[in-house]
Image (cartoon, rainbow, N blue to C red; front, side):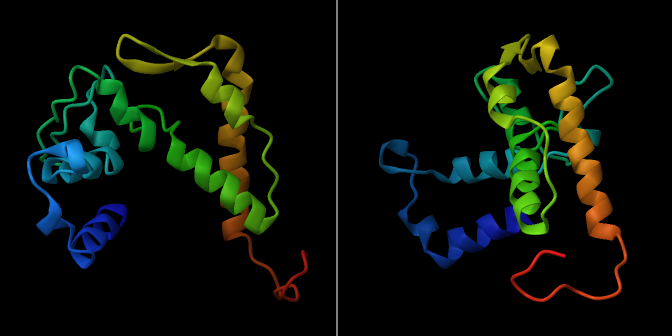
Length: 156
């Protein structure tokens, strides 16, 4: 869906006409391909060792200047810890009144790229656990049946 939205915005705003091969003035056509690749990762695009290869999506691996960890920022198919998940957990948590007990700032501050992978300090194991526990709580909130909706503007 995100790729379709990006394409729509690209076409609707006439950006393809403003694009050339010189990126000094903004985004170039190959940047759109790179953005789509980074947001549409599939777990099947990783081999058993956790290296991205892009075979499932039938897209070639982008030339990221040896910075393959960039594939793990937006949609991490290797371990599912990514900015997209953190963003929606925080946003949906406010909307659904589901509390989160992980610290995204600390998680990001204590992350590091090692061997071209985003890694977290061992002390963050409980923070990571809490991130996935929050995800499970959201799933429960999304799928739990209820008799009637609370009145607008109130929390039930």
